[in-house]
Image 1 (cartoon, rainbow over the protein chains, first blue to last red):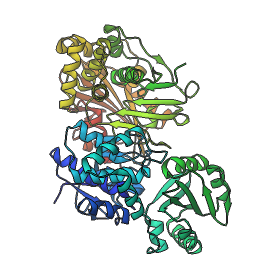
Image 2 (cartoon, chains in turn purple, blue):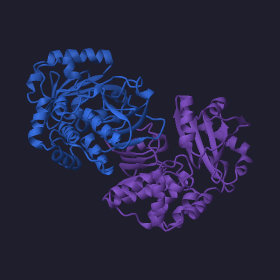
Image 3 (cartoon, one colour):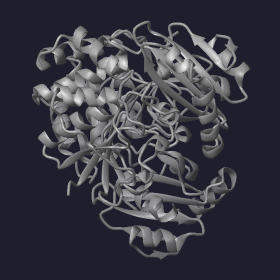
Image 4 (cartoon, helix red, strand yellow):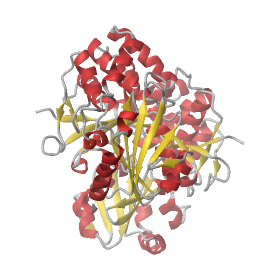
Length: 308
Length: 308
């Protein structure tokens, strides 16, 4: 049994899964006994990346304290995005690129956050700082995460450091970033074979904002209408989830990864506030968000300010 | 006016003050416009270090949002240890070596925490990572912080990295670490010229633990009896502070920096719990804590577990 689990957030995206794999690889090279696990099933996009580079899919777990006493978090820190029993284990380290909230430890720890586009960009720097070589397969999945998080370096979250890391990783992985990147993003946009529940859960996070509990999901598409045709069924599923989980607001971002715009479906009583926060209008529960692709940078802070 | 303030915790010790100076120096070399400030008056020990190396004493402030919109925190993260109006400014970055708690941001930030003995050890690594040369005076005050935090490398919080940093900094500063270190520690142990209030406030922090608010102060001495002779007056001052601030428990650690043991004076109704947590006995409000010199590693986690 491995002594330390490494994992990203619930409803894992490609960065959450691959940063667990790459950071665990680094830690093991440094002499620790760690194992990457996943807090949810792997998306089509992530599966495409792992399979392309022949990397094993991490085991899916929902609790961890039954198997380990110590963990390392990647790509998240907030308790509600982590393992259900995160309060029962010791967090040894965190590598993340998100805001810090609802995170608390009894002991000093290793925490490395940087305001870059992708956790794997930070892990790339850690490999360099520790002078550990990145193997071809690990470089490939790290590159995939940067492409995924920055929509092929086009998101406003993308920094110079993400670009430099992606270019170096593409070299090591031996792929053409543009060609591989579009294949990867398209692999994550199949929606017709998914239930409403699956679309809502695929990449969704819960954020406390003031006294409100806000759920923001995101789904990447190449054809927005594929989703809008299912609006009624999606709203019904959002209502069921909101009632069950106590969300005050549920926003589903539908991001066109080729156009770099989003459309959003809103469930909840705060239409006016959301429109003000995101500087747009709403019609029949649908908002158009021109130029908005980043939940973290272009949606969550604006809603947080509005509701806090 | 500088655009960004850099500061350590309230009741600043040598690491809190000097890490603000050294991190501000580094950030300015990297092109930012920052200024170190202090959230409280400077101790005798810190003044000894600053004056020895001819470094200006940072300006003391209690609020920051009247002067700046953005800040960088060093040597702390918890809101109750920070500026009174910390919620009114944006925290751009944190460099720290403590637990993380009561810390929250709306935006991603740069956060660098490592479980080492001193914030300046992390800043030493940052200088190296950025390939910025450390000038003699900055090296001297950084070394002083490591000596202060690790009691001349003898505290259980001291790591290999602290030792390596201290040796490199002593070289740059051109001092003999042992000789200078004892002079520095002794400079911080004058207690006879201080009021009870000053002794309690000199290096004290408040920790929420479960539903309790716990105050832990620390004073370094070479003669413990100097403090114990004033026990009644100290307990009276602890009562007044506890009543005013709502502390459920007030512990004053009196650490003999030459012997590396502590004695503690306890005010509050939880004698049994504190003795269990710290594995000792109490007599007339006084506990002997053999081998205990580190509040962070040997006192706060143990009390946190007991009261949570």
